[in-house]
Image 1 (spheres, rainbow, N blue to C red):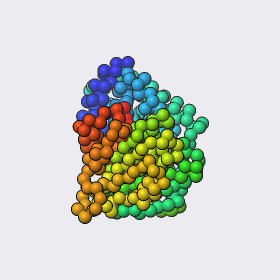
Image 2 (spheres, helix red, strand yellow):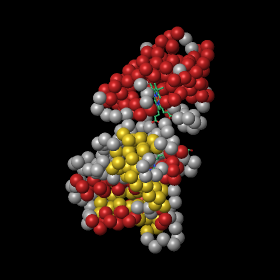
Image 3 (spheres, rainbow, N blue to C red):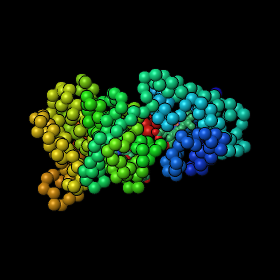
Length: 373
Ligand SMILES: Cc1cc2nc3c(=O)[nH]c(=O)nc-3n(C[C@H](O)[C@H](O)[C@H](O)COP(=O)(O)OP(=O)(O)OC[C@H]3O[C@@H](n4cnc5c(N)ncnc54)[C@H](O)[C@@H]3O)c2cc1C
Ligand code: HEM
C-alpha cells in the first residue's frame, strides 16, 4: 500500500474545504438513502467531523497500530448513532466517490485499491470493537431527569437516574443526547462521584445559539429521558494512589468535574487538604454555593473560595480565579476545568508562576468534543 500517495491525495482533497463534506453526504444519501435517518435532521453545522476523521484516519493507516485504541473507542461509540456493521461499506463507497470527484485526473486504479484496503482495515477495527462491546455494554444508557433546577441566568443543574448500573469515575464525562434535540450528542461532565442510587448530576451552561445546551437548560424538565453514552476521559481522574493535597480551579460549569473529585475524596479518601476555587464572572453566576458550603461544613479538610471577575459590588475575592488560587499554592497538584479560554489562560499562568507541568491536570469544555489522535 502506498501510504504517501494516500496522504498526498487526502491533502489535495481537503483543500476543497466545506465542499468535501457536502459532496460526501450527498453521495451517501443518494446511494444509500437508508443512512439518512442516522444523522441529525439539520446537517447545517459541524458536519465535517466524520469526513475529516475519515480522510485523516484512513490516510494515516501506516500508523494504524497507534490509532487502534482511538478507533476502538470510536467504533464502540458509533453504536450510540445506531450504526451497524452493514453501514460501513456504504460510507466506504461514498468516501471513494468523494475522492474520485475531487481528484479528477489524479484518481487512479492504484489509488482506488489502496483507499479501499485502508478503509477496510480501519472499518474492521471499529466494527470488531463495536461487536465485542455489545456483549457487555449497552450502546447508551437512559437517564430520567428527576431534578431540574435553574440556578442562575443560563445555568441549570440537572439530576438523572440511570436505567442500568453505570460505572464511571469522578472527573469523567459522557456524550449526551436530549429528546428535544434527537441525534445531537454533546459531552457533559459528571458533577458527582458515583452514588449508590445510580444518579448523576450535570452542570450545564447555555452557549449562545447552542442546540443541546439550550434544550438542557431551558427545555428539559422532570420526566424527560436523556441518552447517555459510555463514560470517557482520564484527564481529571484521581487514581486510588494519588494522595497529594489538591488545588482545584474551576471556571463556570467547569466546577462540575472538580466537585466530583471533592466528593471522591470525601467518600473514599485518602484524607488530604483540598482547596476549591470557584470562578464566575458575576456573583449571580456562583450557582452552586449553597451545596458547596454544605460540603465545606461537613469536611474540615475542604475549603471553598468563590472568586468573581466582573462584579464591582461583590464583597468577596475579586479577579481571575487562577490568580487568587495561585496565592494558595503550596506544592499541591492543581486541577483546572472550564472554557477553553479560561483553561489555556490559567495553565499558562500556573506554568509562569513555577508550578511544575507534571502537577497540572486540566480539561477544557470545547465545542469539538471528539478526542481524536
Ligand atoms: C469533555 C467535555 C466536557 C464538557 N462538559 C460540559 C459540562 O459539564 N457543562 C457544560 O455546560 N458544557 C460542557 N461541555 C461543552 C458541551 O459539550 C457543549 O459544547 C456545549 O454545551 C454547547 O453545545 P450546544 O449544542 O448547545 O452548542 P452547538 O449547537 O454545538 O454550538 C453553537 C455555537 O456555539 C459554539 N460552541 C459550541 N460549544 C461551545 C463551547 N463549549 N464553548 C464555546 N463555544 C461553543 C459553536 O461553535 C457554535 O458556533 C463539555 C465539553 C467537553 C469537550
Ligand atoms: C472509518 C469509518 C468511520 C470513521 C473514522 C468515523 C468517524 C466519525 C467521527 C470522528 C465522528 C464525530 C464523533 C462525534 O461527534 O462524537 C463521527 C460521527 C458520526 N458518524 Fe462516523 N465514522 C466512520 C464510519 C461511520 C459509518 C459507517 C456511519 C454510518 C452511516 C457513521 C455515522 C456517523 C454518525 C451518524 C455520526 C454523528 C454525526 C453528526 O452528529 O453529525 N460513521 N464519525
